[in-house]
Length: 116
Length: 116
Image 1: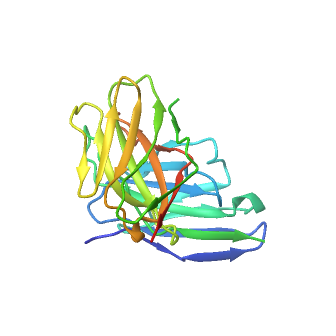
Image 2: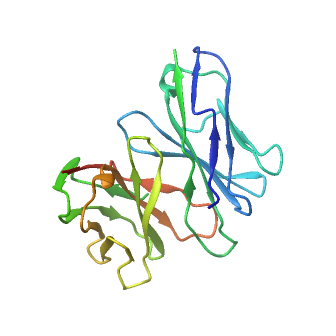
């Protein structure tokens, strides 16, 4: 069964460094998402992406964050200058939805980001 | 804005017994979708069950079923014949039925422990 994959599984970085989290959504899915989960807290929406542009972003998704689909398979989340409070689990999700309908989001296994 | 509330931070159940997890939500929309996701210790987010708000019939997936009360904005998950592998954090989530990319709004989660 196809699944969303994410790399790396765990990333440790120094405060102020740039990180790129990578995701490979399920092929033929059209909508892509990033969520984060700070340890012990609920899962929070960051951004949604469709047709090579951002569809919606939350107040968390400030100028330090960016997303990109550099080729036909990868979907990346970049944090330009990491802060301690960026330490969290980051989940990528993809959705097969066709325009005019809605569908289910399937999640990857997550990347645990630790900022020191 | 939509909100999702799970009022039970922790629950436990004996193996083979039945347990019900509660979820309430608040929205002014009429077209939306509700989900239960499971997050085992691996922290992977796994879809358990999905309910469309326009459907009166409660969704069922094997041992998992929901009690969807639209007027009361309640969406509880019943797990029958609980198994040790059901031990996980369970998140209730809401999605609007809009055609553009729709965020999932999650509740705080309920930690379920199945005891042998």
